[in-house]
Length: 513
Image (cartoon, rainbow, N blue to C red; front, top):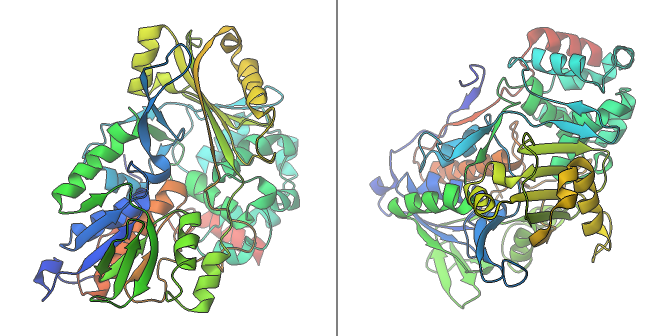
């Protein structure tokens, strides 16, 4: 059931297709992650000629999946499915889900996660099972039944200082709170320290940052998007098989059917202006591709590299904004193929707070088809442990052992299991939303006609986050290009752009006044 309070954002009006123009525009989309694929779909469905260039072998960007050949250990010589780790497809990710519906109209390749408990270092456990769907009752019931919230702690919260949480509006919340970090903000409102781990820190670290490095405005906007702003915010789905087979290969086939040219293992070195068309895209294999428009939908490091190598793109102010974008600290994903199953009843996903160095555990063989097939065949299980915002410098001495120790503490049966295969993935390629960064963050519109940005690090003044921000900026990049050619665009959807309860808004605005 869709939230009746969701908001529609109509696309630009215009011609039904670019084929009605004197000349069909040609756009090069650089990057085949969520943002790039959304941009490609938005353009191709309106008759634009689209080429997608992706430096990796697989589609999906940071949500890619692949088949990995094991060359050591008991499984040497076999192939296993692998990816960058757990991703939650929340029900209010309207624009991402619209993209996925292009190749899976009923979203049958997603399956619901019924609950995702949270546990802290004291063993206290919270659950989202059985909560009311409608805000603010979902958050209220969660707090009242939580073992980490006590009535005496709740009454100590500074209601006036906490008012922005109840009256979030985007982008106004960034003017109010972006000047401070999330940890300081929680201190200022007297938020209970015990509850902080489970109510906020778990979600803050989903942005790959510790609360003391995350903008308080970003935290408040996230609270709105997942709790008080949506009746769908507490429920999510997961892919029923590895990301390549469940999501991106089918979407790639759909895009190819729309005329999109998909090129993988192609790296873009720079983009220049001029030539036979407005832009010339230079690849690492010496090709030069002329284009009427370009969408830069690469990760932050890739964006900075391309812009630095393209001195003719944008004015100095814009180039400085791109250069100033910050990377979040590194994260580590440890995937384990174990020789025995985990205990029955282990959740698909367990969030942790105050249990350094781990942030969550997922039992992949509970929900992912390839992992489940392997587990049945070998009488084992496939388990994943995540550590976000890693502070130790490489080579992360002892981190693997610490992560294993936490896994054994929380799931003792895994201590008796043998590890028949293991893969540890280390990455540092996610954006950091630090205090004060919102105003200087680059937007979809670059100021250069025909050049757009897309990705989860790109500013857009809508209540979206993570994968949904990537999808929304991709669709928006397509819409802006289409509008420039007088072609109609695509309607987008979000949770309400302000707190949905008029009573809470009035109380909050009175408090903030």
